[in-house]
Image: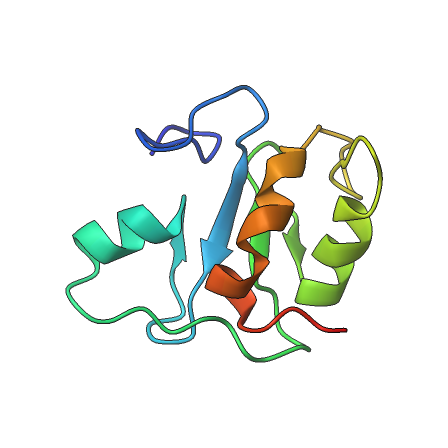
Length: 102
């Protein structure tokens, strides 16, 4: 992982978030990095009141809801520093948080 949260799996200029997992409470650049490095099965984050995503630019930590609000925009951005996020990350919600809320 580079200093802004990119890894060998996801490394565009917009891939700047790190995701936290319930199994270990640690942030990883992506689920593939967790699977390769953690040494235990992945469990999605499940605490809606605790930080689950971190911006790689300013290190602002967001709850699932705050990150979700940021991702609703056509050009998702960090609510703290305004850095752009990869809109394609919406497709991986269930990997990081379990079932997508209806």
